[in-house]
Every structure is written in C-alpha cells, then in structure tokens.
Image (cartoon, rainbow, N blue to C red; front, side, top):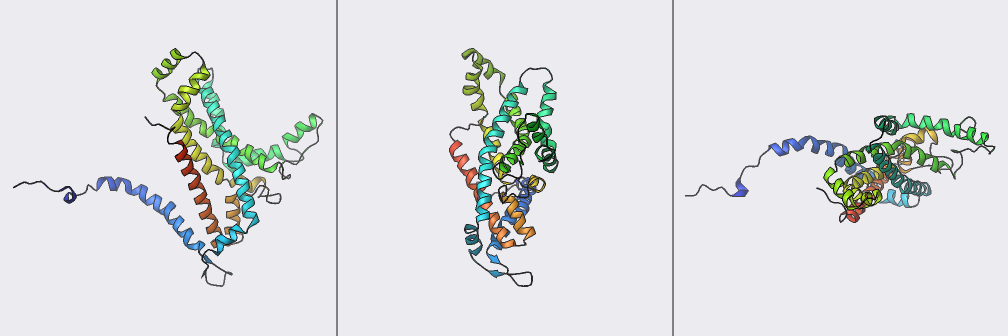
Length: 297
C-alpha cells in the first residue's frame, strides 16, 4: 500500500505565515482598517455635536462635486505634482550622476545634497520664510540691490504656489538622489566597459545603457514622489495656511481643516477616499504604461 499523502492533505508550514504576521498586522491596522473606516464614516453625516449620525448615502460625495474650494485644492495639487515630480527626479538623477563620478570631495557634496532631506519640513519652511518675507527677505533684498521693486511672494496668488513648489523640490531632490546613486553603483562595471567599447559618447551610454538599467528605480521614485506631492501639508502651516484666497490650499491641508478645524469628519472621510482612489489610479496607470520598459534582473 502506498504511503503517498495527497498534496491537499499535507500540513501547511506555519513559519512563512508567522514571518508575514507583523507586516500583515501593520498593514491591517494602519492601512486597510483606516480605509474601511473612512468609507464607513463617509456614508453618514452629523448635523452637530449633540445629534446622532444619520445615514446619508452619497451626499458627502455629492457635496465634494459642488465644493469650489475642494476643486481648487485638486487643481493646486495637480499642478504641484505635474511640476515637482519630474523636476525633483531630474535634479536627483543629475546630482547622482555627478557625485557618482570620481571628483575631489564627492563625499561632502553628497552630504550637501542630502542635508535638506534631513531637516523637518517645518524647519525647512522656516528657512524659506526667511527668503520669502516681504520686508526683510533675502529675495527682496536681492531685488532692491538690483534696483527692482520688492514683491510679496507668498501674498500674491500668482506666485505663492510656485514658491511652495520650490521648497518641495529643494526638500525632496536630495532624498531621491540616494536611490539613483545606489542604483548607479549597482550597475555591473562589465556592462559599462562594454558600453564604452561600443560608443565613446557619454550621452549615448547614458541614453542606451544607464537609463534603461535605472528604470526600476525610476518607477519606484516616481510612485513615491507622486504620493509625496499629494501629502504635502506641513510647510503650509508655516508659510501660507492655504492663502491667499485658497491659492495655495492643497488636498491634505483642506482635509485637515475640514476634520480638525470644522469638525466635519464624514466630509473629511469622503475626501480621504477620493485622495486614496486618485493616488491608486495614478500609480496603476504608471505601472501599466511602464510594464514593457521596466525590467528587473
């Protein structure tokens, strides 16, 4: 008689599940449960602190569609993402290529590029407030020295969002540089030597060899940069508080105000679901369009 045990009757090894358990618990507690809770709360509404919540269906989502401040925040965030993400990634790549070469003092240069990343966003905002202040700011002092008229950088709706973008790029480019630098140092020297034999042009090697090998890192950085662009909130408290006239209001800042200043938690929950779906859709599209260009070794 055969002692063979069918595969479906074999006992499962609990070790892999035990190893995955901490990650599953953390994801469940801090990702999936909050998302489900936000979905649940977004379907209710409260008329005041003394009244019980009542089922509202999709009323909060309809209110989002009719809220001009919400759509202003969406437009502002889209502009921030459209500009800061590619610019930060391009600067990060340039800095990584620079400090990856053999140049004197490259360790100090790496530290200099990475220093803004180590600063808390509130501290970075205070640094840039010293540049943007109307009366004594360094930018206006420079304009005065050139005979130009000073400008209220954070008080002008036409320039306030650009000022926030500059702070964001300055803060994040050094962080993304680290990932590009690690990816550059992981490229096989044999591949680079073969590329030098094929073409003497550095730009040709960069376009045909180095850049394709950096595709997985580029995808990783892009997704993280996109998420970071939609979760900007810290420096708004120091620099603009969403003003003037909501010209610098971003989604997460408006969500914070709605939940903790106006205490409209169901409306903030609906906004949270919109933000999650927006980020998921952007990331899914990026993975879809890059799947034929990203190759892992």
